[in-house]
Length: 112
Image (cartoon, rainbow, N blue to C red; front, side, top):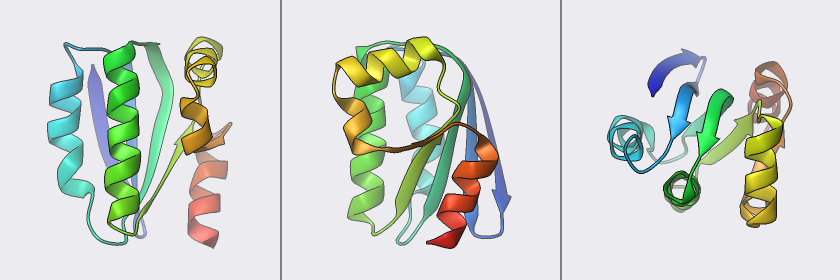
C-alpha cells in the first residue's frame, strides 16, 4: 500500500494505492490519524485502491467516525467499480459523500 499526503489550502488529500486489507490497514491508520484534528477536511482519493477487505471497510468506518467526532468532514473520490460495489452491498457507502473525481471532491469540501 502506497500512501501520499498533500494539501490544497486547508484540505488534506490522501491518495491510497494498492490493497486495503488486514495487512496494510494498521500502517495506513497510523499515518492518517494525526491528520484527524478538530474541523479537519479530508479527501480520500481511492482511485488506485485495487481491493478492500473487511478490515479495509472497518478502517473506512473508523475514519468517518473519528473525523465527524472532531467536527470534520471526509469525502471519498475515485472508487473503482469493484470497491464501490463492495461498499454499497455492505451499506458502507451510506456513511460517505462519494465523488467521481478528485477535483469534484475537493471542490465540494471547499464550498462547505
